[in-house]
Length: 221
Image (cartoon, rainbow, N blue to C red; front, top):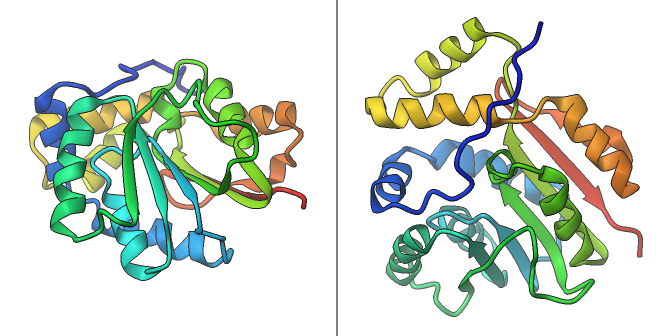
């Protein structure tokens, strides 16, 4: 029997959580995300990054695409505080706007953003349908929806193997966070069922690494 989903806290809003997350080495994961995203030639004139954390992904993206303008949101004030410092240090305050917002109830009207991006926020949400529906709602016609998140392993041995491999150089606290995130993640068929309910072809969700699934969908113009 495959592992059941075990929820983790929706918001990592303690200073300890924010610092632990920020100190992890996200460089390879963020680079792979940007590589895959840019293969789809997204319009980044006004993009939304949902669950930005400490804003590492928008910074990487704006370094690659100087014309990009990104609104980066998170529900964690502690994460955003660190993110603002990183954006300032990168000299990207004119390209990235950070805001405290609930991804399950975005304040923008329908069809606002030229692209909607998200990396590893879905597994934090108790009812992922809510956040994925909102991401689709605010996407303009012709815009790209690009979501990547963790894939729930099928058994305990697979969880242990991923933690041992991926988090080998992390602190015990960071390893525990990663373990919990794997258990809170969705299985591929759960992602595809959400896409079906939104009218998005389920095959837009694919397994793209040993621990990730990715949705890439361009809304009809």
